[in-house]
Image (cartoon, rainbow, N blue to C red):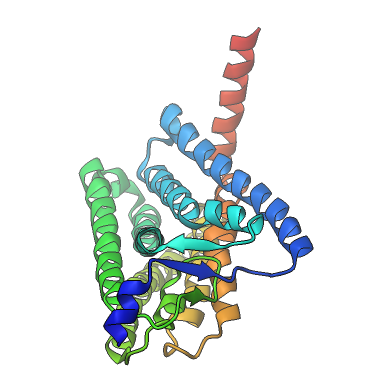
Length: 312
């Protein structure tokens, strides 16, 4: 019977964030503005890093990759959510649901690994400043990025295949997107193996990069405290503050949600976490890295000056 039900599921219905029309219109306006800020902000970061040779360093290379990942992650869910705010029938086809889950999970996983790689970059910059460019050479940066992306894609592929091989007895998803835990609840068979794989995946994708971040920043703080001048300490900490802010937001929320037993978190909590990762974090990343970074602000000023000169 489970397999029969599975073959009949050609589409899923998404309950979204609210059933009230006025609330949905308000949410549409709010999230459209946030979506445009996210895409334009991250594109601006990438453009500045590509065009300004002063930003051609390992730190900004990783930042440009992070911005690209954020754009892909946001586009996997938010455009559909915006359309559904103004739609009476909030449906998504089976194959689109599979693709949405795969892309969002792949980009989310890649971002955690990437934040770990960025922590290692800051560790080398602060603890071995004289050898920084020798250690963090172009080949290593490309290698670390490739490993992050490959690991993210592999984790997502494994989870997606395991989830959509399950027979589904329901097709109403209490979410605004095809999120992993929300889709698992539709199954009419025991999902113990899936719960185990979610726990293992959570450890590998969330906890291992988190341990690397903690290791890196333990050594970074120790090295900063050894700097005698207060100005030197402020400068060293300033190079890490933006990354540490983003890391705290991402890992803190993820550990709270995905490192608990499957089923312990409510649908409302999962929606809030998904919104945080799909809309809030990608929107804040460019602001955090630009407002707290004199190099990025300087690159933006130089770009504006060049643009003014060309328009004269």
